[in-house]
Length: 309
Image (cartoon, rainbow, N blue to C red; front, side):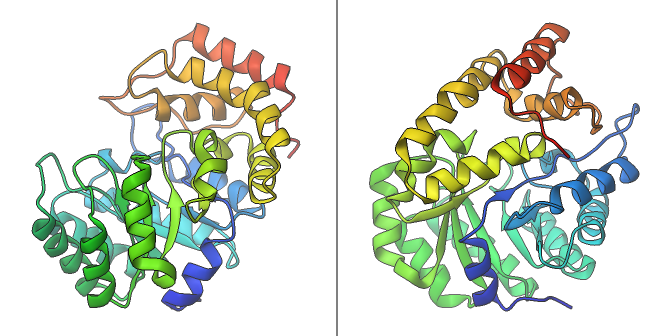
């Protein structure tokens, strides 16, 4: 039984920081339910708008349908009622539908529709893909504009007209002209959130595009800093945002950019650096080196962002 209608969920999510808990794995790279439960409970103890289970930072692309269902159910059980958990619907259409239905059964409040697997997509194909997911569940849906799933403004409008449970548009491309078309065409029918890697870097300028929130990967290990940064963005305090970018975010990006796929790996390294546990990343991702981890640990201390709780 969900706590939010689609409109209520959209209103709730658009005015709070969002995050994607890293999925914990054990030494054999199997889902570590105990460690994940502890991580989600800690994340949900903060004043965060919502948590997306089994998403990109949660390595949803590496999970089987059964694992995805377990991850979402565990997150729902570990979170507070005030912090809604959304699942993810990824892969080819039948796989995404199975993810959606399992997330609904697990008690998730909504879904993020990840890009379909591998192949290029026409706009008609994207409409058919999202429609199949939307029609398979009552859960509210957010589409992720990324990689091979680039939704035109007209496609977004068609989906919004067809499906009442389509509530949001998340962008990871940063194409300003495209975003202007999407937001101008669809207006307040949807809410818009930033999803570029290390979204803090783009948060202030994208606020002017109507993106009142974004997904923060670093919330996984520096939640207090991430929430302060979000507050500065919403207050449009450019000086405070610039100071935090300079003190922590930009040096963090320098470490992240040392390897392909480190956008996820550095989050798990950050969790390890603050003395918590989410295990290693699954292949084809690669863990940070011990030197990278040492540099990240030193940065956390030098920037004064180590969490208090």
